[in-house]
Amino acid sequence: MDLEQPFQICSVDQQPLPADSKPMTLDVGEELHLCIQFNPAYKKDLNSWVAERVLRVRIMEHPHKEQITVRGEVYFPNLHLETQAVDFGCIISDTEQELYMEMTNCSPLPVQYYWSFLTDRKVNTIRFRPSPPKFKRQSSKKGVFLRRHCKIESVEKPAETPETTQDSVQEDPAQQAADVDYLEAEELSSTALEPRSPGKMRGLSQSSEVQHRNVRMQDVFDVRPLFGVLQPGESELVTFTFFGHANIVARVTARCHVQGGPTYKVVVTGEASCPSYQLDVEEIDWGLQAFNKVLKAEVTLRNTGVVEFTYVVPNSSTGTAANPLPGVPVVVPTEGSIAPGKEQVLEVCYLPGKPGVFCRTFQVQVAYLDPAEIFLKGEGTLPGTTKHLPRMLKENEEILQEEEENPQEEEMESVNGKKGN
Image 1 (cartoon, one colour):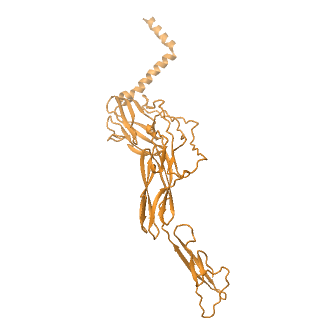
Image 2: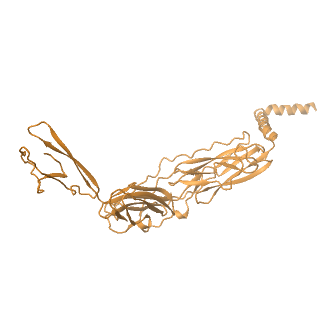
Image 3: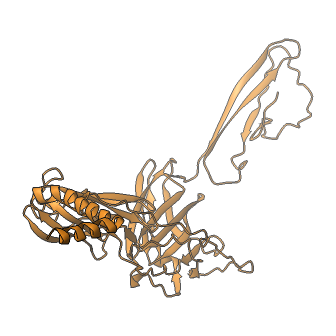
């Protein structure tokens, strides 16, 4: 007879049979009583498990073999967690966010649990990004429309700088694990800088200034409920909260301790940053345009930060891009969200509606930051004036060019005119 662990063949008095025991002989009508022993401590962890083995009985004088399935089950108070990692991504500084995870009692026993944070500096980290560099406006970038052709000039892209600063994180090799309930804030090196653009970088407010300080994990992350009891088959939502201190980068290991069962680990990470953005155009000059013509231009809004933000055009017009109200700018789209490193092109439409100089503004607001203003200006003229202006200017230029090329002919004509008189 053969049987593998965690099962064992025993005699009637529950003594294990030796592994090298000789075949047993049974006379006609004789019976042999044996026991099968199961060792639930075969596995050293506290997770529920099931074992299935096959007991093989071989008869020496017969080719037939008997097979008997042996099964054993071991149960501990166990939980099933929906995930082993909770990532908040990057949120806006000085805000908080909640994420949820389902936890289920997958055992036939009641489960009593409680949560704690692992206190190990090698595993848990709290760091702060340095304050972003404050970009200064170098020059005003405008969308200028030519008076003759009434088209907008192409917006030149800023030249890329050949060198950028690389991210680097320096770790102290002598840093030892500390069994404390708070972690000292560490500073990250400067992130790679974007090539400078004539436009103005916005969103780098004073709230991004971070003072180095000792921050406890309980001030950054929270988990609720902190403890409780789950009956067999019962589920519960666990709430993880991330408090986004300005420019923080944090990671912690949360542990769920089960009384009489295993300890489960969930890695929780999150970052916070101030939104920043750039507008490639701050002023649009359409020049001379027919007052009854719909003028169009584009403004590019770019997310230059590391956090996704939403934007909105306040007090947007009730008109449409195809049929705007006279004297009221129309911007499409009026709201949306932009991921880090991405951009959104805003189409601006304007109908002067009457002859004369016009000057209008509209605003673009990003997240909670102060709105940025875009200036629109130009002059509405009568269609005929705008239509013939290029031809008149061209004729005048041709006359001046001929006079410069043939000054002698002009003098001779002047002398001949005097003689004739």
